[in-house]
Amino acid sequence: MTNTTGDDIADALGLLLRRSARARLHARLTDGLEAVDDLTYPVLSGLARTGPRSAADLGREVGLDRTTVTRRADHLERAGLLKRQPDPNDGRATLLALSDDGQAVLAVTRRRLADAIEDSLATWPQADAQAFARLLRRFVDQGPFAADHD
Image (cartoon, rainbow, N blue to C red; front, side):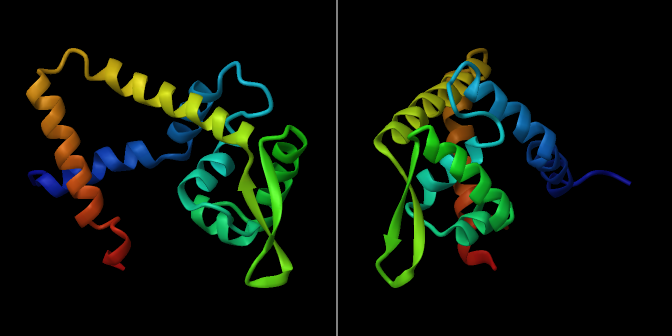
C-alpha cells in the first residue's frame, strides 16, 4: 500500500504534535529565563494568543486542566509575569492576563522561535522557504485544524 500525501502530512504532524516534541521546544525557548520554563510557557504563550482568559478557558486553549493552569499562573504571578484582573462580564470571576514583564519574556521566546526556524531553513533555497511559509499558513487557515473547520 502506498502512502498518500495526506498520510505523509499526517505522519509529520503526528511528530510535531507529540507532547515530548512540544516540551523539548518549550525547554529550548525558555532556557536561561527566570521564572518561566517548559511547564509555565504554555500558559504565557496561550495568553499571548488569546488575551485575558479565565483559568478554565485558558486550560481548554492550551490543553491543561483548570487546576494545573491555576497552579502555574500562581507561579507566574509571583514572578511578575502574569496578573489577575476582574472579569468585566462577571463580577465574581477573575481573568489571567500578561503583565508588561510577561509580554517582554514572550517577546524573547518568540524571537528565539523565529531564529530557530530561520536557522532550520538556512540551507533551503529562499523560494522554497517562502513557499513553505505561504503554504503552511494556507494549510493552517483552511485545513483540518482551522477554527471554522469544526
